[in-house]
Length: 213
Image 1 (cartoon, rainbow, N blue to C red):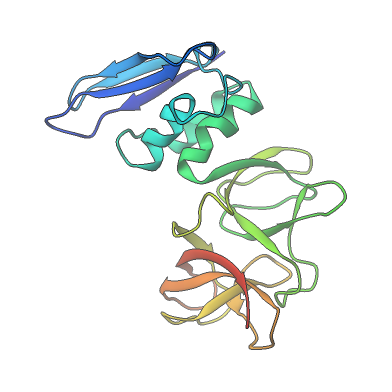
Image 2 (image 1 turned 90 degrees about the vertical axis):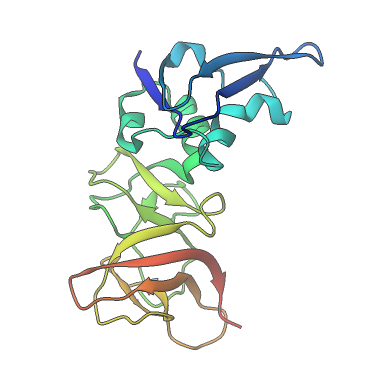
């Protein structure tokens, strides 16, 4: 079991993270963090199965709204994949099993049969993109993926395979590196470039996974 350290970035407001007990309408504060304070949470105290009411998702909601912060890579230390994904959705992250060795900052899709993450086979937007890897990994390993749909409107770093300008819509080539998506209708793209760059450089993309009109 591992601990997760939450930080309250507010200089003035207490952060109260509520939990629904699951068998009644009342809720209670599970963790209270002072302004600019920190709170270490044991993963054993995080229940990803408690229910679907908004109160049951106060922890990932606090991360999504920026009311709490964590070091993203600290999620790797958590043993339970369910807890990893429960907390990670507040950051637009989902742990996926790799179907091949894949480095960080590359665009991936999910295989329809296994659900594993792979680099694009066609490299032209033919496959539906699911997100961008956030760490290096080997075949069979769980890795963090900045992932649709919870990451829509988030920004992500992607390695470029060619010069890409601000405003270009990008997909992944067969190496998972960003290229400008062809204008053909129905091709999938990751999102729109907000900070451009050249071949081999990292660019920034605002995630809005969709198909060309």
